[in-house]
Image (cartoon, rainbow, N blue to C red; front, top):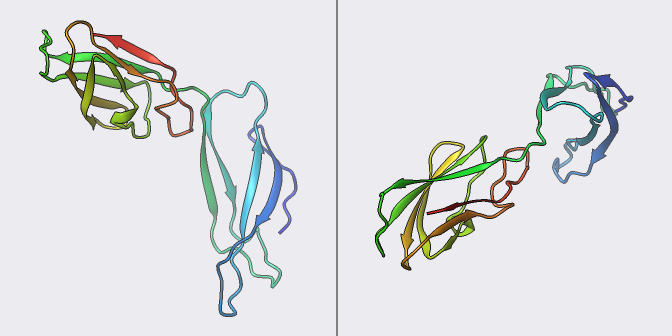
Length: 171
């Protein structure tokens, strides 16, 4: 397969290489996988783009061509999700009585685990996802006084792999 460097919407394809595969046994032709490295120009704004290989544009050594278009959608995102914490109930905290904290991300995120939350003066008994960017934590106070609930940095990732910055709420 030959693919020259091409500019497409300001993107430069730098490397196009074949990856090894263990598929295709019993005399069948091995399927071939490829990796493409895309270099984005400095200052490029966040955006969506696609990399496409039109049908009949790739040819194997036997002369067979790809029968379908292949399209890869990529989201170029460098912004980390921001977390906001707010107490939702009750107004007065009672020792050993749970209260709820809503954790909201500024964008869709991957799953957050209850063990990732830091609680000074209490513990998280349950964490429930609420869609793609919010969670409700049930917190049980274990001391009298102020309770601090915190989402440490690098515990929440968006779908581009950007990790959150540390945010905390004092209750």
